[in-house]
Structures are given as C-alpha cells and as structure tokens.
Length: 198
View (cartoon, rainbow, N blue to C red):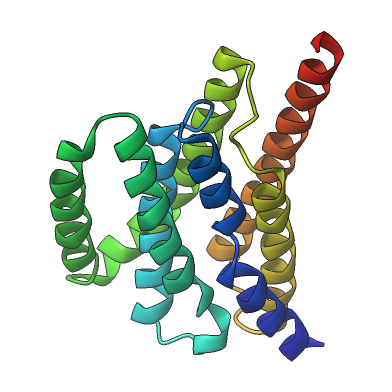
C-alpha cells in the first residue's frame, strides 16, 4: 500500500501542471492565474525539497518535488510571458538559487524555513483564491491540476504517517490539502456562475 501511494503520487505529479499549462497555451492568457501564488508555491516546494534532502529522507518520500518544481518553473515562464513580465525571470532565478544555497548552511535555517514554508505555501493558495475572487474568472485555471494536487497531499499524508512521522511535514500537508480543496471548489463555483450567465 505504501509503495502504491508513493508511486501514484509521483505518477500524478509527473503531469500535475500539464493541464494548467495547456489551459494557458490554449487561451494565450494568464487571466485568473496568480503570479504571486506561483512564486510562493515554488518557494514552498524548494524549501520542502531542501528539507527532505537535508535530513536524508528516503527518496521515495519526496521524489515528486523536483518534478513539480520543473513544471512550476515552466508555468511561471508562461505566466511571466503572458503578463509581459519576462524581465522578472532573472531576479526570480537568482533569489531561488541563493535561497537554495542558504537553506543548507545550518540545521536551524532549514528547520525554520520548513516551518515557515507552511505559511508561505498557504499564502500561495490564498493569493490564488484572491485572484479568482477579484477576476471572478476561472476559465484559465485548471480544475484537474488543483484536484490532483489535493490527491497528492492526501497520499503524502499517508506515506509520511507510515515512514518518517515528521509532524512539521504532516501539518504542512494537511493545511495544503484543505486549501487545495478550497481553491478547487472556488474554480468550480466560478465555472458554474459563468455557465449561468451564458
């Protein structure tokens, strides 16, 4: 059961952001998708990857993070492009690379960062919610991506309970799952509203 949860999470994450990227490319617009949310989410994933690797957790417990990070970088590039902000790509890259290095300098730094990453990742979800509430448009936001993200959190709650039992990781996963459900429900709400007005 543990291996199934591990590998199903990796399989889902391999295509997690593809529906969102496809929606952006089809619409040639990033309306309804929050740049702030993507940057915060990417920061949270980088911290989680650094934390898991720092403590030498089994690779199967976090192998999806590099996959999601690569997809988020591509998605971030699309959003920057469609928002006319490609000039911000270099500063973001420098900040992420320097942050990666700093996280590994001391144990207390990576521990603090992991605790704060829950707040950062929660802020990313609230940024996406705020964007949806402001635009009242979820046409370019992928319900499938957010639903799959909910599944990966649920699967990782199970695998973490079965392996490391790391409370910091568990709290983060539970919070992220609840917020992913909220974002998914909000996307569906605005889809339903848009259909009624058509």
